Amino acid sequence: MRDEADEDASLAVYNRVWPRDAVTMAEVRSYSARATDYGDHVALVEGEPVGSVSIALMPTRPTLGFSLLTVLPEHRLRGVGSALYTAASAWCGVRGVHELEGMVPEDDRESLAWAERRGFRPVERNSRLVLDVTAVEAPDVGAPSGVEIVTLAERPGLARGIYDVACEAYPDIPGWHGVTMEPFEAWVAHRLERTDDRADATFVAVAGEEVVGYAKFTFTAARPRDAEHDMTGVKRAWRARGVAGALKRAQLAWAKREGFERLQTQNELRNEPIRRINEQLGYRLEPGRVIVRGPTADAQGRTRARR
Image (cartoon, rainbow, N blue to C red; front, side, top):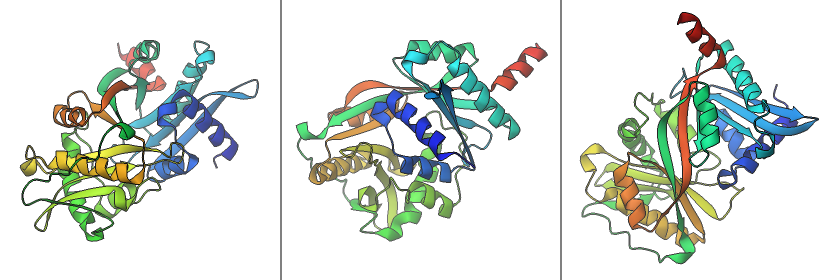
């Protein structure tokens, strides 16, 4: 049984270290609910929380532990991070998992070096792009000929078509090669019906009766005037026809009408088409995240023993 006080303390540390990505406990609960297993540890110094780590095993990559390890800046270089890494490794080892993935701020060289000393290597580089909605005009959607942009709230029967798009789009995201797609019902529950999802903020590109693309926002009460781009996907046969751009413009126009002030997204450096669309719409670069992957502490020991 997880201790709610420790969970609250862990989240408070995370939100202090990652203020631009702050979330509420409702989003943490939603995330842990779609994991096949989930763990959370908090580090205390004289009874005060100074660091935390959460670990999730997700159905899309069952042999990889997804971890968020955070230490308050004033308590770094004192062994707190190492202790949390060891705890996360032990949690994974009991479950037969010996590889971890985590994220490091793009502009935090010390944390990246800390991870690299433990055998972690970058696998993705996701720049953050941010748009001040108050500073731009609502654009015309300008959908390609024969394509209509609707919302899932308007056409709830389009969920199956959205899933079909995702099955093509997910494996093509740089760094996501080999991802395992969940069955339709589970995917809908975990990707369209979470507490941070809204059907009226899920936009669908339809050509005749075929769903050819979609784009959706996620939200958090921790940042009520922000919306975050969760996914933009287009079927391979429909790419380079202006579908993604129309979906993005529909999102921006909606956010403007709804009174949101800031939109943000994370784009992998190799994903040039979507980065170009965002930059054309006025998004500006801010420091993002480096996704790193490496061995658990016990796996490091076995690797050294084999040498």
